[in-house]
Image (cartoon, rainbow, N blue to C red; front, side, top):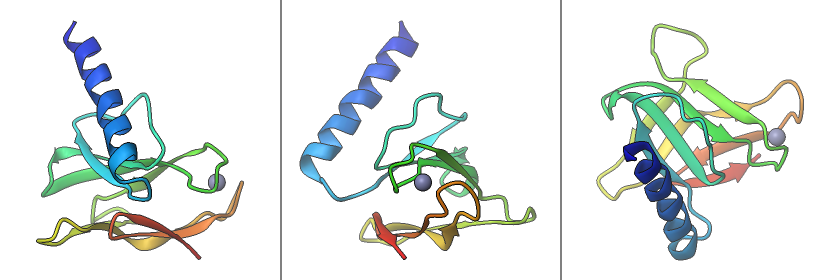
Length: 115
Ligand SMILES: [Zn+2]
């Protein structure tokens, strides 16, 4: 029952976010790798926002691949999650896929910026 409620609350959250912020990417903290990844969301896996392990997102090119980014500093390659007081959230450096679709993009201030 709780799992069902969590699933539907996430679906409602995605719907509400798309309705209110059609071009923005939402970041959501999860405590385990998500089984269902929505577009226009970055799932941050970790204990809390100061202790993050991985980020998951759908490739923004439309290929529907799931991209997993390492956020653990002592493992390479490594991305860094950034946020400011205004609520802007980013991951750095850019994501540059060398295989499959070869997309290259930044996630800056809750937006995907295709290079
Ligand atoms: Zn792609």
